[in-house]
Image (cartoon, rainbow, N blue to C red; front, side, top):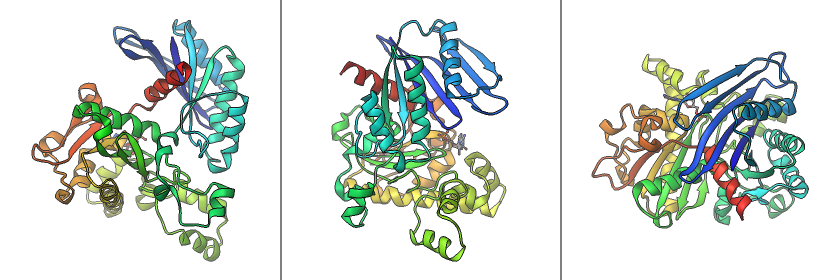
Length: 404
Ligand code: AMP
């Protein structure tokens, strides 16, 4: 059987096709349809043969809507002979609220319950729903499964997920912490345990997903017990364009004193803040180059970014009561040796000691099996760099849901 994984955004669909093989899931195609609804579209697919060779196809014909994008994907997969045994589609859905803590086979009732979560994720869930609706309409023969970014954090205890606000705000408005990037945190935690050769049940890990979006999770015995994102993906670490933590009074101040509307404040905090707000760039590579050349704003952006992560690392060590490993993943975590070194500098208090030679130049994608250890031999805590693979995790979860 083949499993198609779809990540539908407002003007794009990212996808991967996996073949369920005796040796595990094999990636057979990956692609992207973007600029949906614009005058020129862009679509590309890379097909991966069993011997590892790849062939690429690019198309710039306009893609009027998501349905056309989905048709492009399926027809290209068919052309490549990869859709003959398509059995299921796994959809990434950002917000499952308190409703969904496991991958869920989609029917009308599930769609209605995902729609109920839209007020919690107005920037994300509508596009995810569009992808689901298009897939169900065009391929009613396939099983569709929703895999939620929030689900892995369904194990957060009340002490971690409650905000100190009146009960009625939780009961009536769902105001609590949910956490995101769950598929990534779950995946790298499991891979880290395998690399350490220990059962996940006995490990206490902090996983750092540092990409354009960024979040930390404390994982105790394979279960998420604390994470840095909250009601929305805005809380927590400094991100590419999101502020992460700030005093909520900043929002009232901006509305009252700067005359900004709630929508403007939301835009500024989501799209104009974070690294971009601090230094005018949100790509870590560019910022590191600028900082290396003596640019003070870029250096400050890095300092704020690193400071916030270190604060969370210390807090999560306290939450866990012991630390077995710190796991770096996503674009920055997997690739930036300098950021990893800055985050782990002088962390003997937590038992963390990096090995400079192991860390220098290390990129997860170049490491065998996408995983490497970068701690010193005498470090009490392992420091691992793991290539995340959210789509593979979604495919695994989809198969689990289909088979259960
Ligand atoms: P992601 O959202 O996981 O794709 O991560 C995107 C972020 O990873 C961007 O800020 C990139 O600048 C950053 N990134 C990717 N490669 C590198 C690299 N070699 N060094 C530093 N940052 C990187």
